[in-house]
Structure formats: C-alpha cells, structure tokens
Image 1 (cartoon, helix red, strand yellow):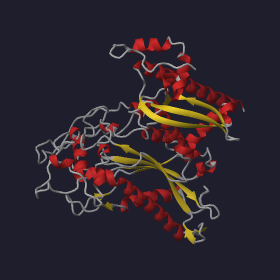
Image 2 (tube, rainbow, N blue to C red):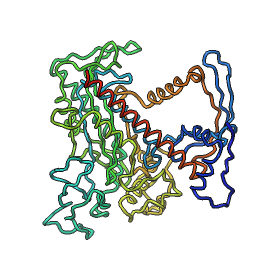
Image 3 (tube, rainbow, N blue to C red):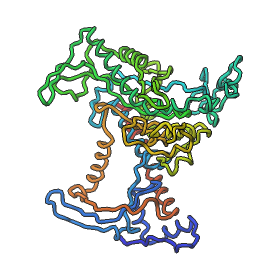
Length: 523
C-alpha cells in the first residue's frame, strides 16, 4: 500500500472542503486510504498514532511480519476516540449505546453468557428523583391524549398557577401562568435565582451516589427481614478461606443510569432484579425461593426511599451539614406487565440512550475546569448553571475566609485546597458536571455482561473472521502524535463511508429479523 503525504495542500493556501474531497478521491491510493481509515470512520476526532506494528505467530511465538506506520496512508494509524458522549462524538457514542443496550437487555432476558432463566425473575423499573431546591419552570400534562409520547402535542397545564401568590423576597413573581412548550428555554430555570438553593443542589449531586448505595442496602435488609418472618431459610455460604456465614436467600441485582434533568439535578433510572442464592455457587443466577414476590420488592423500594437519608459532613458554610434525601416523586413500575407498555426492549433502549448523555439537558456541555478557566463559567450573579458551577468551586475551597479574617469573595474562588483531607474538595474536580462525579451507567457485578466482555468478543470476532489473523497476535509499539482528521475533506469522506456501512448493517438486521418472522409464521 503506497504512502500518502501528510499535507494535502500547501500551508497558507485557502482550499475548500470540496477541493480537499476531490484531491483525496482522485488519488490512486484512495481505496486503500478508505479501508485504512475504516476502524476510525465516523469518529469526530480520531486518535493518530505512529510507531511499529509486529505480527507474532500465536503458536510458535515467531515474528511473522513487521510494519511501520510510515508505510501506511498518511504515515499514521487511525483509532476511534471511544468517547461515550453523543455531543462529543456521534459515531463512538452510537457504538457505546449499542453496548449499553446489550448490558441492560441481557440482564432482563439473558444471553451472551447470562442464563435465559433471568427473564422469569421479578424486575421493577424505579425512577429516583432529587428533592426541590426551589421552584422552577416546568411542563406538566395532566392527561395525555397523544399516541406517541416522543412526539407529544398535548396541551400542558399552566406552569405554576397561584391565585394568591405575590412576589418573592427578591421581588420576583412567585407564580407562572405560561403553558411551556417542550423546547421552551425557560424549562428547568428557577423562578428566582436568588431564592434557589444552588449550594444544596450541587451537594445533593455530589452525595447522590452514597444515598443510592445506602438505599440499596436498605432494600436488601428489608427483604432479608421478610425472609426471616416467613421462615425462608438462609443459605450457608463458605468463603475461600473456609469461613462460614449465613446469607439471605435473595439478592438484588441492579442496572442504573443517571440522567441530568433540565434543572441540573441528577436522578436515577434503575432496574432492580430479584435473584436467588445457590449455596454451592454464589455467583450463579438461580430462581427465587417460594415466598418472595415482586410485590415484596416494590414494598422494599418504598420502604428504603422513605427511611434512608444522608447527613453530609460539616462544612464551614454549614456546620450542621446538608440533608441528602430522595424527592417525593419515586416511580416504581413493573416490566412486561399485562397492563403496561413497558417492555424489556423499550427499557433497555431508554437506559442506553441516557448512557451517552451528560449535562446536555441543561444547555451546557463543558470539559473539566481549572483555576485558569473557572472565571469564564462561574458567576455568583450569573444564570442558573453559572451559579451552580460557582457553588461547586466555592464549596470546594480550602478555607472559609479570604486569608485576612474576612468573608470569602468571588475572587477567592482561585484559592487552592489544603493538604489535609477535605471531603468537599472534589467538588472542584466535578464542577463541570455540576457536582455529580459518578458514572452515568453502573450495574451490579452479577446483573449482566460487562462492557469489557462485549469489546473482547467483538475483537475476537474480527480476528477469527480473517483466517490469517486467527493464529496471529498483533503487538504495537505506538506513540500518540495528535487527534482529528488531517482535513475537513478527509472527515467528510470517512464519515460518509461509515454512515453507509451503518445503514447497510441496519438493513441487513431488518432483513434477517423479517426472515426469522416469516419462518416462525410458517411453522
């Protein structure tokens, strides 16, 4: 395969994207270049690597081939960035979303190493929301008459209709009679920015992971108590060290996705599945013992939500700490119920969609902030998001004063953190996420397959698909030299080819599904 120069046009010469496309497409090595960029095709900012690639025989360990990236088109190796966020890279997020769908769906129906019997285990879909930190503009439809909630055109109720409401202490109206459209930029914005408790909200985002951990423990404890009351025997488990312990006969496995609401508060969409326990193999997924039903799981969820709160450690701004608890709107729904349209596939697709998002719902998508960039985004007198970022940076400071005994000011946001442990210090690290520092998709260890297993299976398939690669191990000594395509024309060509491949794959899957349906109908 011939080498193509890195520079497609002379520096300083204005060359349009169309001219770049024609230049590349007219090159004799175009087909080779297109195949070379296929692994990163569609990626917004592929990683460019340089170095040596060695092929080693899997059986003998002998080197069967060696290649330097200088011999490749553009003298570089392209690799997809792998970013999960759809706002950053649509193509890599599309792949991640597909993997997320498999992770969630296999825990509901089985497959890919998960036994099919999990499809008969009780499952509930729970939405845990944050409490109110102040009134915000919202859209509420009392009664839906639309057929498709994705394209809902129902008339909403007035936002906050209050016949006796006047103004807040800051002179802002305490009511809103507007019927907001779904794309209204005011949705999620506080009625009064000065009344809104921005500090409490970022602290809630920060400690929401701990609140979820304790809530799940409370759910499991409640189920264990039910098992004792109903005489369901506990399981005798022996650890690897020989220690004997008695464990509850049921286990809660979860898959969880975090969603950032328009008001910039996190809430969790969670699948909770009840599994039994096998004394001989604690990792096995077995059916529940008799005496525990999905009704008990629902009861355990409501009990855990109502009882569990977290009081945060003392802070100079609030010595008694903040109370972190769930909001009043906790929705518990069953999967595949006869009177509900919530199915395995719909839930998996719903959670996979949110796994590729972050703070986009708030209208902002930021990278990690530093002392050099914080003043561009944080403002104690700014809009809603600017005040949340400022609250993160302010609460994560090292001291409550400006160093002279006076109160801290906006300019003191640049202060560094003390060497002593500061539980709130990491709020600065997660200021761009408005305090939330957790993963957007998490699961219990035994819930389903992992992303790593799916990627390994995909890599193995690619190797075994080619007989020459099946017995070969590729070892690369590569160095990062940059990111992004060399020109807009290259990006257009690679992305177009990737879209065509995705469309062909989609059509092929639909044809196979149709043929399977025909075969089932004929049978």
